[in-house]
Image (cartoon, rainbow, N blue to C red; front, side, top):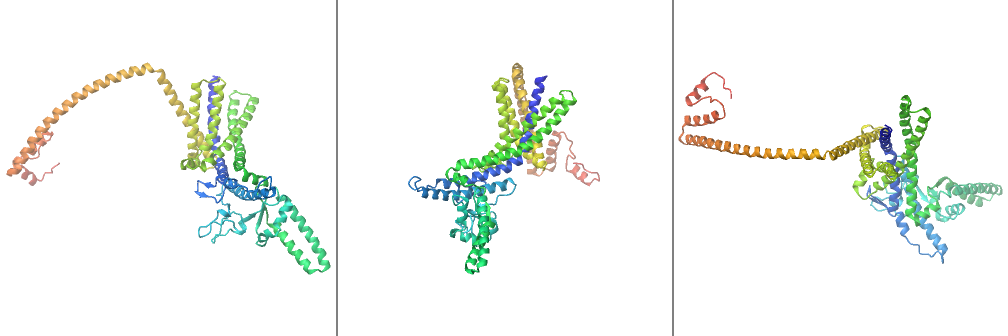
Length: 526
């Protein structure tokens, strides 16, 4: 009895896990699209839209640094910072696009190098902006309020501010451009700018007392410049170290970004999964309490355990599902890109967990090899069907999470039940080998009798057809002769033979009877 209950409990757990995977459809879809943006940033090609970037992280990493770090360390560091600056642009755009996808929006942030003029040429090395979140205007120019210039310069925040206030950056200040600095420099640059503004304000007060108009005008212009820099200062999502890593080791850098996004997906889904799993457990244990199958302490312990388990399963589903979704979404194969829009990525993650449980039981000796294969087949079939029903359920019940969860649970239960029935049928057939042999012999005897009957039937049909052919040949010959000599009564007599042969009574036997019938007021029924 306990083994039956344990089996029912495991089957119920599998259905709940399928429901949790279905509930993750929205999370996996959004965060998977975020993962895809980082994959695109690495390779430079968006296979979903067919767009190809001007340069990717991989391209920058393949650009060699000509200076030797030993003989020319300054030159090497300068070239490395230059590569890191370009890599920072790519990573900044990828992270912003990922956040846009996660929030459910269509990603719009791009590098200006990847925008186009009306004539179809790219805005490579735009004089003012590096990235834009609104692409370009009708003339192909980045929109100022939605664009920014990135400056990953200087070995510390103070040097970075000095470069922003220098001659090389004058055009950005004069055109009131937003200036984006490294994430780890932003607070320092902001503090240095405030300190500089305060110092200039004090100097201006002293100059106002002296009446030196020329010096006063210069300080006021400098103050306006620093206020413009402070006002337009923006924090990048990328640090200096991350930019350098992206330029030197893009594979590791991209993997870290993908893991960060997947980890967020896992935690978001874990919260939802814990709530769903906990709710199911409360109902299940409440019923057990009413039936006196558990006491209050056992029920409470079971609820805590089920909630934690559902949270862990949901985290794994969100984490692995989003990575799989991102990879499939940017696959070169159209079928994989299409599949990424279904619930399959989440089901792959959950299937791995379910199969892992079965393998653990097999290794522990709880089940034999045959049972192991049967369970893996059942769970694999169930999860794949649940993935299909996830999308169907979401369409049928357009309520976020609810429709997908119900669809996946129904799909898993239906598939698992069908698989079990089929498996039981195969087992029954295996144990009924002798019965199958007996039935086979009877079938062979029936087939032999049917063949003999068929031969007799064919012979009878051939004789019947031969007799019929002779009859009709004779009748048609009489009809032909009657037509040749104009014998109307002979023609009627010949056709009446066919009528009589088919079991019917002729309406008239000669021309005189035909005329009488036509002149009669009686109705003729054909």
